[in-house]
Image 1 (cartoon, rainbow, N blue to C red):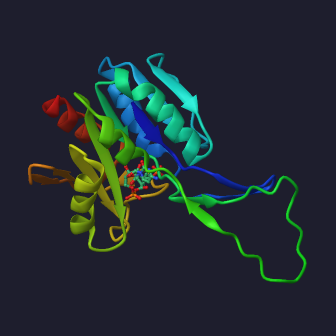
Image 2: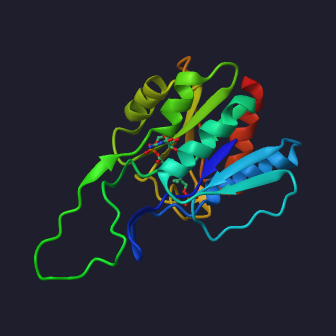
Length: 207
Ligand code: PMT
């Protein structure tokens, strides 16, 4: 199972809070898994990408809450879950059913926390391998290691926005894989498709 892409948290019928994820990284992993013979459940936020491989079963969602519900529904039959989505940590407390009008005053939006999907799966996992991503802007390795513990991950794929060619929207990425046993493997700049091969190789070793 994979999560991929951004989530959109609705403010009103014409506006949302989102992020820059294109889905490229998650979809590349889904393709690599399918090509190796896996049946893949791809839970995707809104992206421009399409899947063609018949073994990729895509579930389209919009918000973090929808992604959470789909992930919780499918997790127990999975061998592994890879959380490549950029999930909004907060959503507007209230949805305005009519378009918000400008009235010259400050507009205050109150945000409330979304569920942490990876941590929720980490809390219930049995035999599954749970793989997180960590997108960092500073203190990358220390923050990624904290996520392994907090979310009960088997390993984390770290990409840092400090590295040119890594992260959102690019066709390339630079990753390190940090295992909960302390092991760390660093990889050079590669296409996201080639990065997907490295991640799936590592996953296969862990199964
Ligand atoms: O989609 P692209 O444009 O190709 O970009 C790829 C990417 C940069 C989005 C991808 O490589 C990546 O890093 N994805 C994770 C982004 C992220 O939200 O990282 P984080 O460090 O905030 O979250 C840590 C982990 O918890 C991630 O596995 C995330 O999916 C998961 N999470 C986070 C918050 C939340 N509420 N629920 C979660 O499951």
